[in-house]
Image 1 (cartoon, helix red, strand yellow):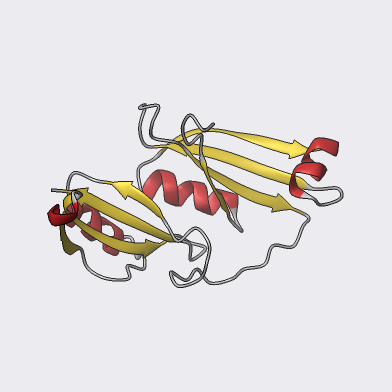
Image 2 (cartoon, rainbow, N blue to C red):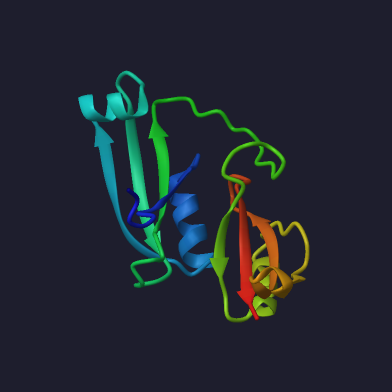
Length: 150
């Protein structure tokens, strides 16, 4: 039924700030922005007179690497609930890096909240290999992950 992940959507409070973070700090490429409104949008989001600004950014040309979709609702109140790894939801979006130590330093140098330093994981016995990873937050507090397979 499912062919591939088409995009990963994140609701944000300030689209310009989020575009700047994902583009300038994480290095994703801005692909463009659309504006959604009308009957179809109202039905899709189940809100009357719903309007949304939607931006797309991607870090890869590989079809298996879906873009990040940033959604800012216009004239609709959005509940800001702190991201929590221990609450049923999408827990994080994970980004790949070739150099996790440089990525970590870059985020710290840009005042990005990191939940830990890079940690080493060995799942070879489970068939998944070795990696180093850490969690961090975007400007809205959404939890993201940086991973370097070893």
